[in-house]
Image 1 (cartoon, each protein chain N blue to C red):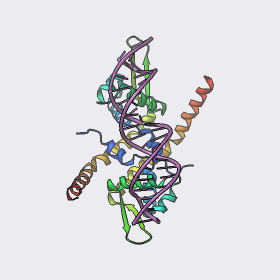
Image 2: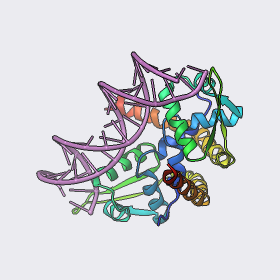
Image 3: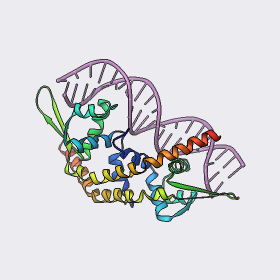
Image 4: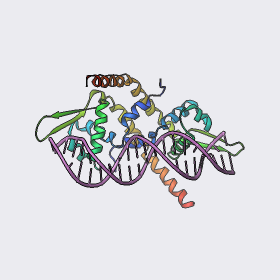
Length: 116
Length: 116
DNA sequence: CGGAATCCGTAACGATACTG
DNA sequence: CAGTATCGTTACGGATTCCG
């Protein structure tokens, strides 16, 4: 029995690229594998595949395979996945609002460096 | 220039124990090091120290040292840290609401195991 | 009491090559 | 096009010991 369920949400967002993938899929509705890959600079196929599989396993995204040559695979959000949207928005808002604050912290740290 | 600021929030919550620490500190206002350690089963001093330092560096918690023997160090939330509360609450809510859903997923996975 | 220092194992991530 | 497979690296967390 757990008191704090923050972990549950955290677990799903955990991973270097998960939130980027979710951002793309909530913005674009349906995307193919390489389309997704192109839209996320720096990600490797391996990572994209791995994180998509985890999201699929958690029932956040749907993977739709078309049996054709060349292959075609489409990814999109599940309804359950869409329930994350308000949360992601809240995190984005908080992050935006306090980006300035973080810069200030870094600036102070730099000053301390100079004084030392 | 970043489009998605979810990372900013994620970065601060990242780490195995951060949210547990924040939970304790928002609930109890002010706590000493060992008090905090006792309240979080399984955490080691190293991890508690490390994560507290990160939180302190991000200006989420305050570390107050009393110059006395034996040492006394108190930790508490900053005002900035308290601005995280709505976000943490939102994450907690989402996690709670969908804990049931996750169980269902696991159950389905178990059934697939049996069918295979 | 509240740490710091050290060592270690694992899991996450990354780069590259290959495939149906 | 949409992946696997393999290997190497790095970061994270855990256990233990020592210290003012």
